[in-house]
Length: 440
Image 1: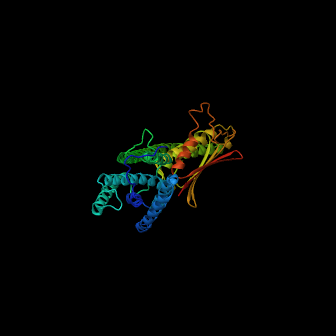
Image 2: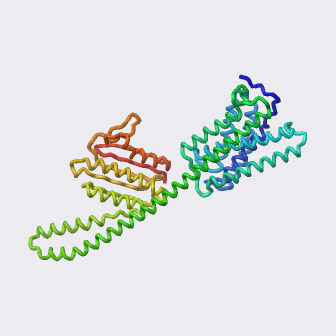
Image 3: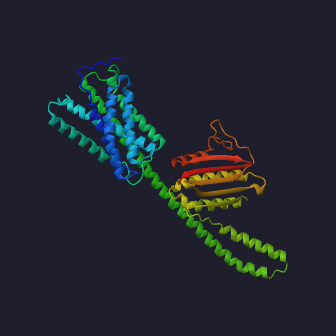
Protein backbone atom coordinates (compact mmCIF):
# COMPACT_ATOMS: atom_id res chain seq x y z
CA UNK A 1 0.00 0.00 0.00
CA UNK A 2 1.57 3.27 -1.13
CA UNK A 3 1.29 6.16 1.34
CA UNK A 4 4.01 8.43 -0.04
CA UNK A 5 2.82 12.05 -0.14
CA UNK A 6 4.77 14.74 -1.99
CA UNK A 7 5.32 17.94 0.02
CA UNK A 8 3.54 16.39 2.99
CA UNK A 9 2.03 18.96 5.35
CA UNK A 10 1.93 18.69 9.14
CA UNK A 11 -1.11 16.94 10.58
CA UNK A 12 -3.86 18.85 12.33
CA UNK A 13 -2.88 19.22 15.98
CA UNK A 14 -4.91 16.97 18.26
CA UNK A 15 -5.86 19.96 20.40
CA UNK A 16 -7.57 21.69 17.46
CA UNK A 17 -9.42 18.53 16.46
CA UNK A 18 -10.70 18.07 20.02
CA UNK A 19 -11.87 21.68 20.23
CA UNK A 20 -13.68 21.36 16.89
CA UNK A 21 -15.47 18.22 18.03
CA UNK A 22 -16.48 19.87 21.29
CA UNK A 23 -17.73 23.02 19.57
CA UNK A 24 -19.72 20.95 17.07
CA UNK A 25 -21.47 19.24 19.99
CA UNK A 26 -22.19 22.64 21.53
CA UNK A 27 -23.69 23.94 18.27
CA UNK A 28 -26.24 21.12 18.02
CA UNK A 29 -27.03 21.24 21.73
CA UNK A 30 -27.83 24.94 21.28
CA UNK A 31 -30.40 24.38 18.54
CA UNK A 32 -32.27 21.24 19.64
CA UNK A 33 -34.91 20.52 22.25
CA UNK A 34 -33.16 19.38 25.43
CA UNK A 35 -34.82 17.32 28.15
CA UNK A 36 -32.53 18.61 30.90
CA UNK A 37 -31.96 21.99 32.50
CA UNK A 38 -29.50 24.40 30.89
CA UNK A 39 -27.30 24.21 33.98
CA UNK A 40 -26.73 20.50 33.44
CA UNK A 41 -25.97 21.10 29.77
CA UNK A 42 -23.32 23.66 30.70
CA UNK A 43 -21.79 21.37 33.34
CA UNK A 44 -21.59 18.41 30.96
CA UNK A 45 -20.10 20.58 28.21
CA UNK A 46 -17.52 22.00 30.61
CA UNK A 47 -16.51 18.51 31.68
CA UNK A 48 -16.59 17.27 28.11
CA UNK A 49 -13.86 19.57 26.75
CA UNK A 50 -10.96 18.04 28.75
CA UNK A 51 -12.37 14.60 28.03
CA UNK A 52 -12.29 15.24 24.28
CA UNK A 53 -8.76 16.68 24.49
CA UNK A 54 -7.59 13.65 26.46
CA UNK A 55 -9.28 11.28 24.03
CA UNK A 56 -7.56 12.89 21.07
CA UNK A 57 -4.13 12.70 22.70
CA UNK A 58 -4.69 9.06 23.59
CA UNK A 59 -5.67 8.41 19.96
CA UNK A 60 -2.52 10.26 18.88
CA UNK A 61 -0.15 7.91 20.69
CA UNK A 62 -1.87 4.83 19.30
CA UNK A 63 -0.14 3.01 16.43
CA UNK A 64 -1.46 3.83 12.96
CA UNK A 65 -3.00 0.38 12.73
CA UNK A 66 -5.44 1.48 15.46
CA UNK A 67 -6.21 4.82 13.82
CA UNK A 68 -9.84 3.85 13.20
CA UNK A 69 -10.20 2.85 16.85
CA UNK A 70 -8.94 6.28 17.90
CA UNK A 71 -11.57 8.01 15.77
CA UNK A 72 -14.28 5.73 17.19
CA UNK A 73 -13.17 6.77 20.69
CA UNK A 74 -13.56 10.43 19.69
CA UNK A 75 -17.00 9.71 18.21
CA UNK A 76 -18.00 7.94 21.42
CA UNK A 77 -16.85 10.92 23.47
CA UNK A 78 -19.01 13.24 21.37
CA UNK A 79 -21.95 10.86 21.73
CA UNK A 80 -21.62 10.83 25.53
CA UNK A 81 -21.51 14.63 25.64
CA UNK A 82 -24.64 15.00 23.49
CA UNK A 83 -26.67 12.25 25.18
CA UNK A 84 -25.94 13.55 28.70
CA UNK A 85 -25.94 17.30 28.00
CA UNK A 86 -29.26 17.03 26.16
CA UNK A 87 -30.94 14.23 28.08
CA UNK A 88 -31.59 12.59 24.72
CA UNK A 89 -32.54 9.08 23.70
CA UNK A 90 -29.82 6.95 22.17
CA UNK A 91 -31.07 7.04 18.58
CA UNK A 92 -31.60 10.78 18.72
CA UNK A 93 -28.14 11.34 20.20
CA UNK A 94 -26.52 9.02 17.65
CA UNK A 95 -28.17 10.93 14.82
CA UNK A 96 -26.95 14.29 16.14
CA UNK A 97 -23.46 12.96 16.93
CA UNK A 98 -22.99 11.83 13.34
CA UNK A 99 -23.93 15.28 12.08
CA UNK A 100 -21.67 16.98 14.63
CA UNK A 101 -18.78 14.69 13.70
CA UNK A 102 -18.96 15.68 10.02
CA UNK A 103 -19.19 19.37 10.97
CA UNK A 104 -16.13 19.04 13.23
CA UNK A 105 -14.14 17.31 10.47
CA UNK A 106 -15.11 20.05 8.01
CA UNK A 107 -14.11 22.97 10.25
CA UNK A 108 -10.87 21.34 11.39
CA UNK A 109 -9.87 20.56 7.81
CA UNK A 110 -10.77 24.01 6.48
CA UNK A 111 -8.93 25.79 9.29
CA UNK A 112 -5.77 23.75 8.84
CA UNK A 113 -5.92 24.19 5.06
CA UNK A 114 -5.94 27.97 5.58
CA UNK A 115 -3.14 27.70 8.11
CA UNK A 116 -0.89 25.74 5.75
CA UNK A 117 -1.78 27.97 2.81
CA UNK A 118 -0.66 31.03 4.81
CA UNK A 119 2.53 29.31 5.85
CA UNK A 120 1.50 29.06 9.49
CA UNK A 121 1.69 25.28 9.60
CA UNK A 122 4.34 25.13 12.29
CA UNK A 123 3.07 24.34 15.75
CA UNK A 124 3.63 26.44 17.68
CA UNK A 125 3.57 29.02 14.91
CA UNK A 126 6.24 31.59 14.21
CA UNK A 127 3.47 34.19 14.04
CA UNK A 128 1.22 33.35 17.00
CA UNK A 129 -0.99 36.44 16.69
CA UNK A 130 -1.90 35.69 13.07
CA UNK A 131 -2.39 32.02 13.91
CA UNK A 132 -4.78 32.89 16.71
CA UNK A 133 -6.63 35.36 14.49
CA UNK A 134 -7.05 32.72 11.73
CA UNK A 135 -8.17 30.18 14.33
CA UNK A 136 -10.80 32.42 15.95
CA UNK A 137 -12.06 33.81 12.65
CA UNK A 138 -12.41 30.40 11.00
CA UNK A 139 -14.07 28.77 14.02
CA UNK A 140 -16.43 31.68 14.63
CA UNK A 141 -17.43 31.93 10.96
CA UNK A 142 -17.88 28.20 10.35
CA UNK A 143 -19.69 27.29 13.55
CA UNK A 144 -21.72 30.49 13.35
CA UNK A 145 -22.88 29.68 9.82
CA UNK A 146 -23.60 26.09 10.85
CA UNK A 147 -25.70 27.27 13.81
CA UNK A 148 -27.60 29.74 11.64
CA UNK A 149 -28.28 27.18 8.92
CA UNK A 150 -29.19 24.26 11.17
CA UNK A 151 -31.36 26.15 13.66
CA UNK A 152 -34.25 26.17 11.17
CA UNK A 153 -33.86 22.42 10.66
CA UNK A 154 -34.50 21.53 14.30
CA UNK A 155 -37.15 22.45 16.83
CA UNK A 156 -36.41 23.76 20.30
CA UNK A 157 -39.96 23.02 21.47
CA UNK A 158 -40.28 19.35 20.50
CA UNK A 159 -37.81 16.45 20.49
CA UNK A 160 -35.93 15.34 17.41
CA UNK A 161 -37.17 11.82 16.73
CA UNK A 162 -35.41 10.44 13.63
CA UNK A 163 -36.63 7.18 12.22
CA UNK A 164 -34.42 4.11 12.20
CA UNK A 165 -33.93 4.38 8.44
CA UNK A 166 -32.98 8.07 8.69
CA UNK A 167 -30.47 7.37 11.46
CA UNK A 168 -28.97 4.47 9.54
CA UNK A 169 -28.62 6.62 6.41
CA UNK A 170 -26.98 9.39 8.44
CA UNK A 171 -24.44 6.98 9.93
CA UNK A 172 -23.70 5.62 6.46
CA UNK A 173 -23.21 9.10 4.98
CA UNK A 174 -20.94 10.03 7.88
CA UNK A 175 -18.85 6.88 7.49
CA UNK A 176 -18.47 7.35 3.73
CA UNK A 177 -17.63 11.03 4.14
CA UNK A 178 -14.97 10.30 6.75
CA UNK A 179 -13.49 7.43 4.73
CA UNK A 180 -13.30 9.38 1.47
CA UNK A 181 -11.90 12.52 3.10
CA UNK A 182 -9.10 10.58 4.80
CA UNK A 183 -8.43 8.05 2.04
CA UNK A 184 -5.27 9.80 0.85
CA UNK A 185 -3.68 9.43 4.29
CA UNK A 186 -4.08 5.65 4.01
CA UNK A 187 -3.09 5.23 0.37
CA UNK A 188 -2.28 7.55 -2.51
CA UNK A 189 -2.65 4.72 -4.99
CA UNK A 190 -6.42 4.96 -5.56
CA UNK A 191 -8.51 6.87 -8.14
CA UNK A 192 -9.86 9.08 -5.33
CA UNK A 193 -6.59 9.92 -3.56
CA UNK A 194 -4.26 12.86 -3.79
CA UNK A 195 -0.49 12.72 -3.89
CA UNK A 196 0.44 16.31 -2.96
CA UNK A 197 0.10 17.68 0.56
CA UNK A 198 -2.00 20.76 -0.20
CA UNK A 199 -4.07 18.80 -2.72
CA UNK A 200 -4.96 16.25 -0.07
CA UNK A 201 -6.32 18.97 2.21
CA UNK A 202 -8.40 20.38 -0.65
CA UNK A 203 -9.92 16.94 -1.22
CA UNK A 204 -10.55 16.47 2.49
CA UNK A 205 -12.25 19.84 2.91
CA UNK A 206 -14.34 19.42 -0.23
CA UNK A 207 -15.54 15.92 0.71
CA UNK A 208 -16.39 17.02 4.26
CA UNK A 209 -18.33 19.98 2.89
CA UNK A 210 -20.28 17.71 0.53
CA UNK A 211 -21.05 15.36 3.41
CA UNK A 212 -22.31 18.21 5.55
CA UNK A 213 -24.43 19.55 2.66
CA UNK A 214 -25.98 16.11 2.11
CA UNK A 215 -26.84 15.76 5.78
CA UNK A 216 -28.30 19.27 5.81
CA UNK A 217 -30.50 18.46 2.81
CA UNK A 218 -31.52 15.16 4.40
CA UNK A 219 -32.69 16.87 7.59
CA UNK A 220 -34.51 19.58 5.64
CA UNK A 221 -36.31 16.90 3.64
CA UNK A 222 -37.24 15.03 6.82
CA UNK A 223 -38.59 18.26 8.28
CA UNK A 224 -40.69 18.89 5.18
CA UNK A 225 -42.07 15.36 5.27
CA UNK A 226 -42.96 15.77 8.95
CA UNK A 227 -44.68 19.09 8.19
CA UNK A 228 -46.69 17.51 5.37
CA UNK A 229 -47.65 14.63 7.65
CA UNK A 230 -48.79 17.09 10.29
CA UNK A 231 -50.94 18.91 7.73
CA UNK A 232 -52.40 15.59 6.64
CA UNK A 233 -53.10 14.73 10.27
CA UNK A 234 -54.89 18.04 10.78
CA UNK A 235 -56.92 17.41 7.64
CA UNK A 236 -57.83 13.94 8.90
CA UNK A 237 -58.84 15.43 12.25
CA UNK A 238 -61.12 17.93 10.54
CA UNK A 239 -62.57 15.24 8.32
CA UNK A 240 -63.25 13.03 11.35
CA UNK A 241 -64.92 15.89 13.18
CA UNK A 242 -67.04 16.62 10.13
CA UNK A 243 -68.02 12.96 9.87
CA UNK A 244 -68.94 12.95 13.54
CA UNK A 245 -71.11 16.03 12.99
CA UNK A 246 -72.84 14.41 10.02
CA UNK A 247 -73.48 11.25 12.01
CA UNK A 248 -74.83 13.25 14.95
CA UNK A 249 -77.04 15.24 12.58
CA UNK A 250 -78.31 12.04 10.99
CA UNK A 251 -79.02 10.57 14.43
CA UNK A 252 -80.97 13.63 15.53
CA UNK A 253 -83.05 13.59 12.38
CA UNK A 254 -83.67 9.88 12.76
CA UNK A 255 -84.63 10.24 16.40
CA UNK A 256 -87.00 13.05 15.43
CA UNK A 257 -88.73 10.78 12.98
CA UNK A 258 -88.88 8.00 15.56
CA UNK A 259 -90.38 10.36 18.16
CA UNK A 260 -93.01 11.39 15.65
CA UNK A 261 -93.82 7.77 14.86
CA UNK A 262 -93.89 6.83 18.55
CA UNK A 263 -97.04 8.87 19.08
CA UNK A 264 -98.89 6.75 16.57
CA UNK A 265 -97.31 3.46 17.66
CA UNK A 266 -98.05 4.05 21.34
CA UNK A 267 -101.63 4.87 20.43
CA UNK A 268 -101.85 1.61 18.49
CA UNK A 269 -100.34 -0.35 21.38
CA UNK A 270 -102.90 1.06 23.79
CA UNK A 271 -105.67 -0.32 21.61
CA UNK A 272 -104.13 -3.79 21.67
CA UNK A 273 -105.76 -6.35 23.90
CA UNK A 274 -103.43 -9.29 23.35
CA UNK A 275 -100.47 -8.95 25.84
CA UNK A 276 -98.17 -10.81 23.43
CA UNK A 277 -98.76 -8.25 20.68
CA UNK A 278 -98.12 -5.46 23.17
CA UNK A 279 -94.80 -7.03 24.24
CA UNK A 280 -93.67 -7.52 20.64
CA UNK A 281 -94.56 -3.92 19.86
CA UNK A 282 -92.46 -2.59 22.72
CA UNK A 283 -89.52 -4.78 21.66
CA UNK A 284 -89.66 -3.28 18.19
CA UNK A 285 -89.71 0.22 19.65
CA UNK A 286 -86.74 -0.58 21.89
CA UNK A 287 -84.77 -1.99 18.96
CA UNK A 288 -85.54 1.06 16.82
CA UNK A 289 -84.41 3.49 19.52
CA UNK A 290 -81.33 1.44 20.38
CA UNK A 291 -80.18 1.45 16.78
CA UNK A 292 -79.76 5.21 16.79
CA UNK A 293 -78.61 5.70 20.37
CA UNK A 294 -75.45 3.57 20.04
CA UNK A 295 -73.07 6.51 20.15
CA UNK A 296 -69.54 6.08 21.49
CA UNK A 297 -68.16 8.77 23.81
CA UNK A 298 -64.55 8.01 24.68
CA UNK A 299 -63.14 11.52 25.03
CA UNK A 300 -61.42 11.39 21.63
CA UNK A 301 -63.57 12.54 18.68
CA UNK A 302 -61.63 10.52 16.12
CA UNK A 303 -61.92 7.33 18.15
CA UNK A 304 -65.62 8.06 18.74
CA UNK A 305 -66.31 8.10 15.01
CA UNK A 306 -64.37 4.88 14.42
CA UNK A 307 -65.99 2.95 17.27
CA UNK A 308 -69.48 4.20 16.42
CA UNK A 309 -69.17 3.19 12.76
CA UNK A 310 -67.66 -0.21 13.65
CA UNK A 311 -70.34 -0.80 16.28
CA UNK A 312 -73.06 -0.23 13.68
CA UNK A 313 -71.27 -2.57 11.27
CA UNK A 314 -71.09 -5.20 13.99
CA UNK A 315 -74.79 -4.78 14.77
CA UNK A 316 -75.61 -5.20 11.09
CA UNK A 317 -73.62 -8.46 10.93
CA UNK A 318 -74.96 -9.84 14.20
CA UNK A 319 -71.70 -9.34 16.12
CA UNK A 320 -71.75 -8.40 19.79
CA UNK A 321 -69.25 -5.56 20.18
CA UNK A 322 -68.27 -4.09 23.54
CA UNK A 323 -65.80 -1.26 24.02
CA UNK A 324 -64.38 0.30 27.18
CA UNK A 325 -61.99 3.05 26.11
CA UNK A 326 -60.44 6.15 27.59
CA UNK A 327 -59.86 8.11 24.40
CA UNK A 328 -58.02 10.90 26.23
CA UNK A 329 -55.00 8.57 26.46
CA UNK A 330 -54.52 9.01 22.69
CA UNK A 331 -53.96 12.77 22.87
CA UNK A 332 -50.36 12.41 21.65
CA UNK A 333 -51.30 10.21 18.68
CA UNK A 334 -52.14 11.68 15.30
CA UNK A 335 -55.61 11.29 13.82
CA UNK A 336 -54.27 9.26 10.91
CA UNK A 337 -52.52 6.81 13.23
CA UNK A 338 -55.61 6.43 15.45
CA UNK A 339 -57.80 5.73 12.43
CA UNK A 340 -55.33 3.27 10.94
CA UNK A 341 -54.54 1.41 14.16
CA UNK A 342 -58.09 0.96 15.46
CA UNK A 343 -59.57 0.64 11.98
CA UNK A 344 -57.25 -2.21 11.01
CA UNK A 345 -57.59 -3.98 14.35
CA UNK A 346 -61.40 -3.88 14.31
CA UNK A 347 -61.68 -4.70 10.60
CA UNK A 348 -59.62 -7.86 11.15
CA UNK A 349 -61.75 -8.82 14.15
CA UNK A 350 -65.02 -8.15 12.30
CA UNK A 351 -63.85 -10.16 9.30
CA UNK A 352 -62.97 -13.15 11.50
CA UNK A 353 -66.19 -12.93 13.54
CA UNK A 354 -68.46 -12.60 10.51
CA UNK A 355 -67.27 -16.03 9.28
CA UNK A 356 -68.62 -17.80 12.38
CA UNK A 357 -71.83 -19.75 11.86
CA UNK A 358 -72.82 -19.57 15.52
CA UNK A 359 -73.95 -15.99 16.20
CA UNK A 360 -73.36 -16.50 19.94
CA UNK A 361 -69.64 -16.77 19.18
CA UNK A 362 -69.56 -13.53 17.22
CA UNK A 363 -67.93 -11.55 19.98
CA UNK A 364 -65.50 -8.63 19.86
CA UNK A 365 -64.14 -6.82 22.90
CA UNK A 366 -62.04 -3.67 22.86
CA UNK A 367 -60.27 -2.07 25.81
CA UNK A 368 -58.16 1.09 25.98
CA UNK A 369 -56.68 1.93 29.37
CA UNK A 370 -53.54 3.04 31.21
CA UNK A 371 -51.43 0.61 33.19
CA UNK A 372 -48.29 1.78 34.98
CA UNK A 373 -46.35 3.80 32.38
CA UNK A 374 -48.08 2.35 29.33
CA UNK A 375 -51.21 2.85 27.30
CA UNK A 376 -52.74 -0.56 26.62
CA UNK A 377 -54.91 -1.24 23.58
CA UNK A 378 -56.44 -4.72 23.52
CA UNK A 379 -58.77 -6.12 20.88
CA UNK A 380 -60.16 -9.64 21.36
CA UNK A 381 -62.33 -11.70 19.07
CA UNK A 382 -63.51 -15.28 18.89
CA UNK A 383 -62.33 -17.27 15.86
CA UNK A 384 -62.86 -20.75 14.44
CA UNK A 385 -60.32 -21.22 11.63
CA UNK A 386 -56.73 -22.09 12.58
CA UNK A 387 -54.31 -19.15 12.68
CA UNK A 388 -51.33 -19.63 10.34
CA UNK A 389 -48.02 -17.78 10.21
CA UNK A 390 -45.27 -17.43 7.64
CA UNK A 391 -41.57 -18.25 8.01
CA UNK A 392 -40.92 -14.93 9.77
CA UNK A 393 -43.66 -15.55 12.32
CA UNK A 394 -46.03 -12.97 10.82
CA UNK A 395 -49.71 -13.76 10.43
CA UNK A 396 -50.77 -14.95 6.98
CA UNK A 397 -53.88 -13.57 5.37
CA UNK A 398 -56.83 -15.88 4.81
CA UNK A 399 -57.72 -14.16 1.54
CA UNK A 400 -56.91 -15.76 -1.80
CA UNK A 401 -54.75 -12.89 -3.06
CA UNK A 402 -51.90 -12.72 -0.56
CA UNK A 403 -50.14 -9.88 -2.42
CA UNK A 404 -53.03 -7.45 -1.95
CA UNK A 405 -53.95 -8.37 1.62
CA UNK A 406 -52.37 -9.19 4.96
CA UNK A 407 -51.04 -5.71 5.72
CA UNK A 408 -53.42 -4.95 8.60
CA UNK A 409 -51.25 -6.28 11.42
CA UNK A 410 -48.08 -4.98 9.75
CA UNK A 411 -49.64 -1.51 9.65
CA UNK A 412 -50.49 -1.75 13.34
CA UNK A 413 -46.92 -2.82 14.14
CA UNK A 414 -45.50 0.04 12.09
CA UNK A 415 -47.62 2.60 13.95
CA UNK A 416 -46.71 1.12 17.35
CA UNK A 417 -42.99 1.24 16.52
CA UNK A 418 -43.30 4.92 15.55
CA UNK A 419 -44.34 5.61 19.15
CA UNK A 420 -41.66 3.30 20.62
CA UNK A 421 -44.36 0.76 21.36
CA UNK A 422 -44.79 -2.97 20.79
CA UNK A 423 -47.44 -5.35 19.48
CA UNK A 424 -48.14 -8.83 20.83
CA UNK A 425 -50.57 -11.43 19.50
CA UNK A 426 -51.83 -14.28 21.63
CA UNK A 427 -54.28 -17.07 20.82
CA UNK A 428 -55.93 -19.19 23.48
CA UNK A 429 -59.03 -21.35 23.46
CA UNK A 430 -60.24 -19.84 20.15
CA UNK A 431 -59.71 -16.29 21.38
CA UNK A 432 -57.49 -14.03 19.29
CA UNK A 433 -55.99 -11.25 21.44
CA UNK A 434 -54.14 -8.32 19.86
CA UNK A 435 -52.36 -6.09 22.42
CA UNK A 436 -50.59 -2.82 21.68
CA UNK A 437 -48.37 -1.26 24.37
CA UNK A 438 -47.42 2.39 23.98
CA UNK A 439 -45.30 4.44 26.40
CA UNK A 440 -47.58 6.83 28.29
